[in-house]
Image 1 (cartoon, rainbow, N blue to C red):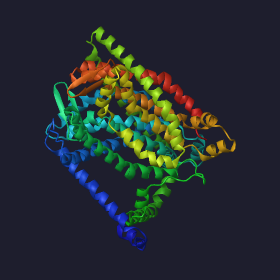
Image 2: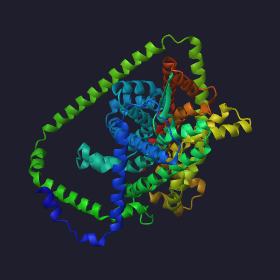
Image 3: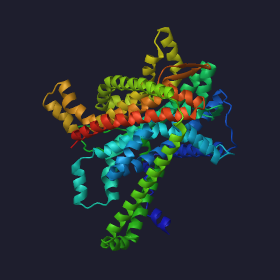
Length: 579
């Protein structure tokens, strides 16, 4: 009787006031999602095909685009769940933080190809007769290109929550879940959304590698937009490349209008402040959904059902609130579980370290020298990339964040540009470098910049959006100059977000080096000295020990850099929290 009693109290007269067109759009999108899910599920469960043949026709391109979209979205769901659990665990458990933060540094600095051998071989062994293992391997590799940026953003924003909010939670004796629901998670939503946009862009950036790759003498290829563009580039089919670019632009614009713009508009309600002088962002699609009868009826049913459950089980809450003695028991159980998880992580790290040592113990000194030399070259490129990226993204991001109208116009363009798989443009840029006599050792900096500058930009925009309007209005009242506003208000307010942007941009630059320092076009390979180039060569040649050693050196470099540079900057950024 629960469902009937809930729906019987709904005012169906509201149907007359709302838009039937909105209902039609909602039903159409719902059916489209169901079609994509069933179509992709059939692809996943079909018989194993290690090297799918790619048809460059437009009809096949539509199917491939849906497959790639499914993989990227599934990887994003995994990334979101991982972000909440991992980031929140680090934030709440300071003992775990000391272990999990360096692990996060290592994972972020590990390139997509670093996960390739273990993931692919393990999953194919588990699912030898269906595409499920290969599909899951591709999704996990896309996941590794998305998740670290989100975790750093979420964790950084949690640490930037004003102390006054925490004191209010303590005064009202909120439980950990109530703190998370009403204070901590809402405070992170704006940053989480903007970092999610960038993470999706990261997924698209490495799509070509994640859908078509080699492991020794074995080639793997899945049907998808990334493999379509990879085949088109290798064949020099510029018309097919254009169609692939067009398909990706359509997907990115659709996601921006149907997902990101509504989420950005919705996140306005979670700003730390709200000024009457500031105009909240709007989304035509969000407004359309609000007008839907189906969504309104669902909301009303949910409210009625929630009220029914609260009323029904009120006496259980009263009874449980009296049992104060249970709280220490619960906290003890949570601590035991947390410590057990940490022990498992330590055991896994020790086991993985032992396996890596066995793999790399016979590598000669000359090879180690070459690895460290290559690593130093790439480190210099990474630092130059961050410097160049910061020079334009900081002022532009602040200007964009302060202008809602301009942001609404340029956000889709930025999304398209950031999400566009830059490796597809590498052959064109290589031709330009050749014409201008630019060596790839310098040109690779430009190639790395194309995939990493957006991390800084999106974090700067997220930080600027969260600047209280009182601070902006204060600058006008005191008639501060542009430089005074920037140095006294804007830069200090965005600094915690900027640190996150720099960290994720550095990780992105290390990752991008595997495609920027080693390029294949029309079956010709162009490479320069660098750790990314070394990793790509090792992966393609099936040199697992060299691959492991190169990834290890790259990871250790990033960890040491994070320990002595980024950690101190993070501490410094705590002085600039919005209070």
